[in-house]
Structures are given as structure tokens and as C-alpha cells.
Amino acid sequence: MHELITGRWSARGYDPTATISTADLTEILQAGRWAATWGKVQPVRFIVGVRGDVTFTAMTELLTRGNKPWAPDAAALIMVCTTDNPDDAKAHDYGAVDLGLAVAQMSIQAQALGINTHPMAGFDTAGARARFALPEDSRAMVILAVGRLSDDPSTLSPEVRERDSAPRKRLPLNEIAFAETWGQAFAAQP
Image (cartoon, rainbow, N blue to C red; front, side, top):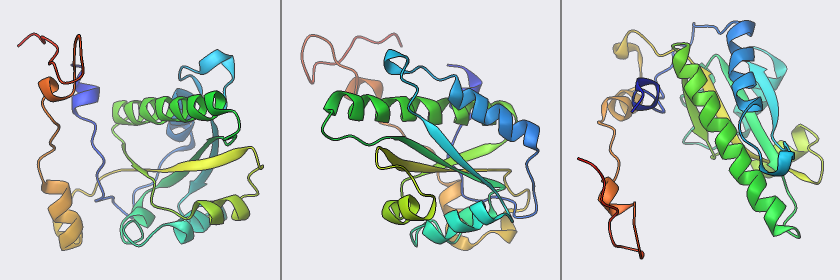
């Protein structure tokens, strides 16, 4: 696997003094813009806040309690939105897929730039709709924290330090990749 994929992880221990350049932030947004999209619909939209600006501050106010302690240390927050039309299940579901692809590509692009991302679903979506005047046919699904990790773990809270130092774990491939029928492991190469 490519090291950009194996090296990507959703850290919390951001350096609250590190900034992000407009050029780097634009590259990350461009990566999301160029993600695959169903039927050329391109439903994904971004609301971008940089630490210290009004947009960033508004997004931090929408975070749930699990994200409030660490996410404001990110250099930027990007709210990622897509279609909201439950009456058209296909468009509704595919819009969510498109959003996932955009967030993944943004995360890999950030990794290539030496920047960490952490996607969050823990925020007040109704509050986001009202605060940012999202149209009725749009929904905010993810806030992506973007920043540089702290060089000094002793500056992090014990909870963040513990979570960031825990080993990354994923289920083995034979438990999630099947062939012929559900539960029959795909014969992966060792």
C-alpha cells in the first residue's frame, strides 16, 4: 500500500500555534473537488474556516463535547456538505458517497503536504444549517479538522496524548472482504 494511505491517521494532538497557508488549504480543497462523482452531479460543497476567523469560531461552537477540547487547535476546519433529498434515495445516498470520496482525497492530499486531518461527525447539524444558511437540499455531514501535529506531546492533555499514542487497529482483511457469499473470506495474497 502507498505510504500516504498507511501514514494517514486521525490525530487530535494539533499544534495550536501552527498555521496553514492558503496555498496548502487550496490544494486540499482541490483534491476534494476532483474526487469521483456519480453522474457528474458534483454535489459536494465546502465551508472553510481558518483559526481565528468568524467561520472557524462558528464551527467550533457547533462541535459536540468530545471534539470541543482538541479541534479548536486545528489550523483550519472544513465543513463538508452534500445533497439532502431523502425523497430521491439514489441522489441522497450517492451524494453521501461523493462526500466520503472527497473527504478521503482531501485527507490523502493533506498527508502528502505533511498535514493531518481528522473527520468529525460530532457536531450540531441543525445548528450548522441555520448558522451557515445551508439550502434545504443540502446537508452538512463532516467537519474536517486540518492542522499540524504538536512536536511536544507533553503539551497535550492526557486524554489526547493517550488516544494519539494508541496503536491504529483495523479488522483483518479476511473478516471484511468476502467472495461467493457473505462471510466466506476473499482469498487475499499474504
